[in-house]
Image 1 (cartoon, rainbow, N blue to C red):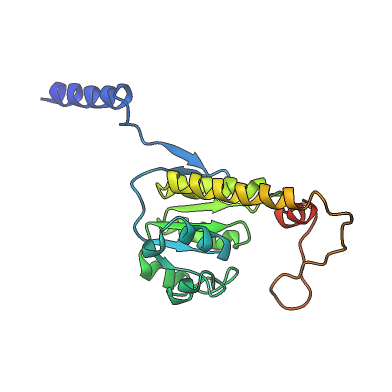
Image 2: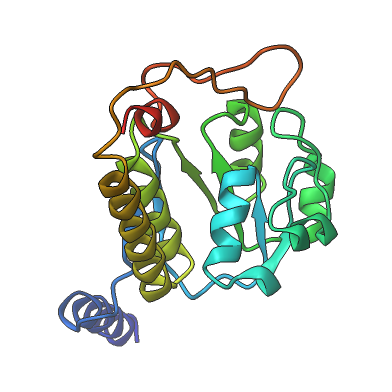
Length: 203
């Protein structure tokens, strides 16, 4: 009897390795943690406004169950359940929403990310990046983990086309104005040199 069980387990493991598609695919988030690419998530919590905007742009508005209080674009985002801010998300509220995907941002506290992982929630962390090209990488990654690769490719293509159009229109500009970019927040906040916003201003 034990021999039969052993043989059954052996062949199960063998076929899991040899048959395409039976192995679970994984990618790594921007903190280096492995993330399993399972079925398309149905209940998504976003922990940053930029992530929320991309999710809406990919047509995932019906699957978003929670966003931060700073997520106000598109206007429909304001109707979603609020889970607190980027620095002070309410873990109990997130837990009550029972998400099958939490998309975090590098600006969220690491202790929050670690706590969500300890609670068993699939968390994928994204970094803003240092140039405009990083935005397209973020869109691609969100497309992969939500199973919306085609929509992500279409969104990126449309944004690249707009970028090229604006760059071409500015070729004839004879001077570069001095610019101060004011970001939302208390006091005067702007972007640093190693940011996609700074890269955008230079283009």
